[in-house]
Length: 564
Image (cartoon, helix red, strand yellow):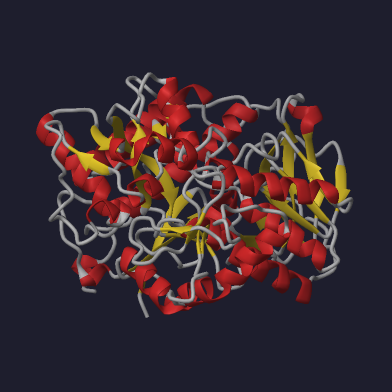
């Protein structure tokens, strides 16, 4: 890459981000072997695998054990479970969807270890849909050239997986569960190794609710960051807390510009926040996307038509919406018939009927919504981040599997596969418990006024404006002009100040993650996968690589790393 093509550094005087969230000294402390933050498929399977290794585990979750993204997953889990399929074919589909940025070694791990992990999930108690002869039902989703997606309850796979893991965790007396707890910051020893974290138990006053969990290793499994946008399929808890915590701790994040917008969220007029998902599996069973005249528009745009990779479908939908001046396109599932829709897609039917749409007789209004972060906290093939003792698993992590665009139903599989790898690595080399070092400005309490930006929090009231700015400027369509508007807004919102408490800590996390995404989207001057720059509409081999972002002295720094 020439100097002219090198990533442009973010202007450092525009926005200063906190290197630590202001909080009182912990009022209570407990110790465990490993603390896992998050209670979705990644967090709970990591905890169960760690227990099989004989370790004591504390699971910290933001609301309650069932409130993460996992239970909302409809489609299923992709894995090679049919003799006519192969890991090589699964890998090819994954790499194709990733548009040149997948790590081949990570993809190989995923597709070869995935089938065994799905079988272990069944051992943990998950019950998937089966044929009368007892064999697993397999379906197909966008980007797949074979039927390799297992599902449960028709379109309620996530709910069944969450039920099974919840039950398994509750049965184990050596898994300690702390619910309604927001993680604040990572604790590190004198040599910088992760040795626990501080957290605030929600519902308690700031001074009373803050405590510390000391641990010999820390695993982040906090899910995604969809709440930086106005409309998302993510639940309200998905505010990027793990990515923000990792950045403040000095860890690298990568590929955060690649946010996947699900092509078909249920369009609800004036709807905000979490939007119901209309699973890709519906298209896999034969539903068609149609424009305002009722004509299919994906035929001829891609060999897989409606089952093209999600970025292709989302962009095609946006083009139709722009051309017609409509807020949505439609999904025609009427030909599937009432019996198939009732048995295979009960969740979707219930969501549609709740807003007055009957898919048996009506077209389903759909629109793209922020869905999945392909990037996150950078890890190696054992889930280790760039901070010693800190691991990341699931959507919060960037393992290299997804590249510029995630293949459908690879997300739950990634959580399963890398949870096992993390547990194996932790059990093999777990250090003694270390003492946390004193952090700078530790004398400041929650009631103090923090004039220094190093420990400032932003006003919780700016959250809505932040989401609207990110949707307009860094959504499905991006350009130099839209990104310039985002930069101005982020700098202004970052200058606001709030009193340290749950709402401001969470909003500061949102701002931190939004700023990292902006920096990467601003720097990457090409269109690739789920990153679409209207002013640079083509993919460029000079940009075939990764932007690694760190937070240093309140400033985001970018490091360019070409593909090897």
